[in-house]
Length: 213
Image (cartoon, rainbow, N blue to C red):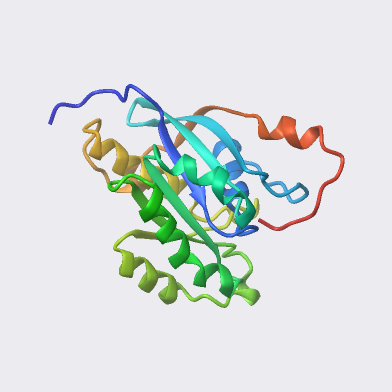
């Protein structure tokens, strides 16, 4: 296998219903932070972060899309050149799980045929409120033949967030013949840098709502 360095950033798109935690997953991975007081994403936001996988620096663009249907015409255009799509649902909200099939149809209609997909059940820290079981999540991922992760972006748990993003990046690197596939547990996880317009956007807005994402 001819191993080379990627010549462009990988574009990872986060989609799913509003308030399932897409923004929090992005912030946890890129900045290792968790923000509870903020306004919902309007349209789309992004971060650029550089990670180190086996002595190779890999740049990722993380695109956080609004889950409200009124923004669909804005956000669907970002599907078209995505390398991977992270489809997130809230394990405490049945409707977000039921809507996974609708989001999958959106991917089929707008994203490249070979786009990598991963299903994420978020808010696993809310143990007493969970109504979507691990088995339900695995069964749904199996239906679509995609990987499944359960995550929490909360600072005191931070479950599987880095593992999910690194596993997805590993698959992209293997697909693009940059590195051979390696089990995620063997990867040295280290982020180098990140940048976002989101913090500037939040800081300039006086009206904020409290939402657990």
